Length: 448
Image (cartoon, rainbow, N blue to C red; front, side):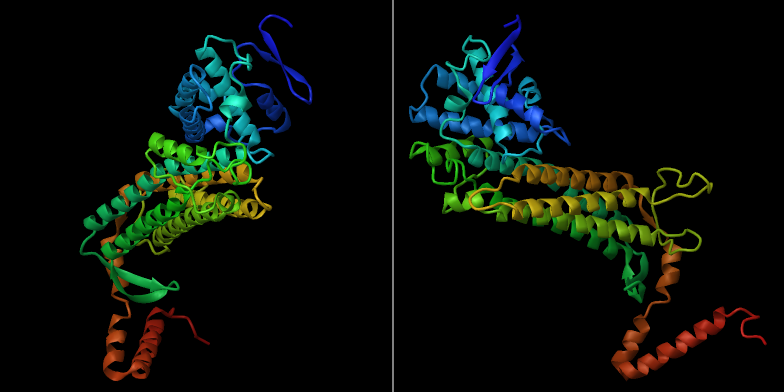
């Protein structure tokens, strides 16, 4: 063996790795097998930290039960704690792509190898001296990919949800602020794109704000089921290979380490195979995206023109809109939000297919679910923040244009129907439409 290189072996064969490499043979095989299509595990810090937190909880439970003893247990806990805290060197060593075959086994083994080799360093040993700390026998003790991966995924989603929630509520607050700035402006309400009755600009803005708050609340409710985890269930939820007290101790340790109220469901076998919490959260992400896309559509329509459209709302100009038509400005921020919303729809659809493909006691497609939900969270957060800062912040209503449209509302006909009946009011509406058509007819129109 040449200097600076170590050899690791398994039943399939051997590979040479740099002496100082924190990852091991199983990570190396995963890198050979799965071309990178997007993020690596370490590229999503919340995911890497969540995996570290799960390993830390397991290490503490094993130490408390005497399954792993000092000084190994102490060094192992420290290494896990470093990853849970987001130690950059350890996150950088989580190099396997998130999308992979094997239900996340490559991710789990990447983490096991990195923690094992960091533990060896803390013990004064060299990476690869697995007789003193083994990725499977020690780091993965009392665990399986099938409980580690889904538990870490849930923790990562919960941690990332905080930023999504803040973005949606901040957008709602900005819309409410703009509502306060537009008190007293009346405008025409529209149903099915046809003239309806008068509404205030303030009410319209507050309706958008309410949608954003409702989206945030929907996500909050969908996050609650993610607190039920199957940690300790090992391979299929039966707890095979773990100390009988390990599941409860591990979940309690995870709750203490993270500050989240993690708990076991009634049956760990059910939790290992049940996709409901994840597709429920995915649906909530899609629902929030629907709300933002609807808001973006409204803004595009109300700002259309400005000469021959509604031109009722004025959006802040942020860039030139055309390479051939000078002076044209397009609603690029709402368009951007629409496209991010469509991306969330796609992520939800991909997650639904992956979750439905889970067979019997385990879903092998969780890596794709992880990738799609992480991307959906990011897209939703970016959409809300960008809409707030680059569009809503400078939004204004054209008071005179809004009043002009409001004067054509159907409020008087609604009142007439209350007094004289719907049919009579309908006749008045028809007469009014004929008169309006006559007023707008060209002088030469209809001439022989």
